[in-house]
Image (cartoon, rainbow over all chains, first blue to last red; front, side, top):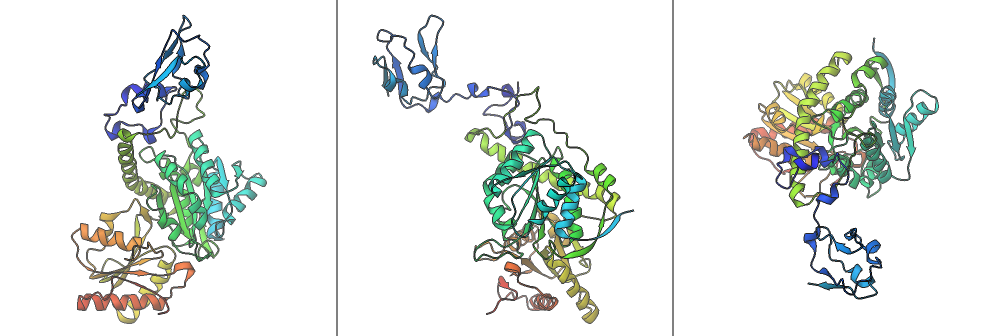
Length: 96
Length: 394
């Protein structure tokens, strides 16, 4: 796995030629959650599991667990708040 | 036996493309490079080569398509001039930073404005920081020879960078000269097949080209790119040596013309070096004064130490630029050669001339005047102006 060998401490000669990546789906390893200034707080009491929030998340960071509950991938959620806006039951609240 | 022909510079480059039979050529016409894709399209239409020709709507697209084809694993090239190169600006940097061995046949022409279709180096000199290797030609023969060597340099595992093969618009691109072509099978054997290790069409390997690099990666990427360009120095010389074996013609970073014993030297790029050689021969016969030329072939990577060494024994140097860099201090070659001398600890009388912009003629008499000025500078240790013009009405 090439992405296991390259990280933010790699010296220049250990990068691949032209930064090409010889592996698929490596964006999972790029934790963009730290860009967040606000984060979604989920109220499972109010949530009706309608899943309207799932397809609108631009970062595919709203997951549906095996038991049907909604979960958030906070490594990749950038805190845009679209999920909170789209929720008909006020089950998602954005907090700073 | 080599093939003796009479070809224009554009025909010579197109002939080299025919001999190489590359995989993909996207191109958009612009004077004076138009003939290159035109001839290649004829070769394809006649069934002489099986290059995939892509008709694109602009040079932004021709370079983008060349980048895409190269990333996919194809041997890709294009041709352009002047504003066409300017429209490729963004992609030039992408090709170099993605380390794609694209080759560009550049026919040098002035940039607008005022709009002008004739030769100067403002197009390629503007792209000097784009990360491309740049090789310049004095004659049609050199344009052909440089082109045949281009893919070998670009595709070398220690380099993997795009190469710009430059020649002067109309002067060599449309001027017909005697030329010696290398036989087809020798060129094919010399250039060989392009077999990249990683490419997008490789079915058993996932690959991403041009990913986003955050600050933690960007600087290291640029250092790696610089190192690849520095590696090109050794590779360019090795390929030239190998090419000499099939062509009998010798190439280096630059040509030293009667420079061995010279007191006064002109540093120049491109076709005007031919006129300068006539001036050198004339001066040497007429006056016995020791005058010589350093004609740059490889401008990127810049052979700084080698240039300084070649000039170490001369008393004064005139550096001639066929482009303005609008620093108010002269041209790019002037700045870089002066820096090369300074870094080598050589403090000589140096003057920078701007000449030939927009196709302005330069004559044997003009060069004789430059050598007279060099002699005066060396005797008086006085440089009147750091940069000035040749053939400008004042």
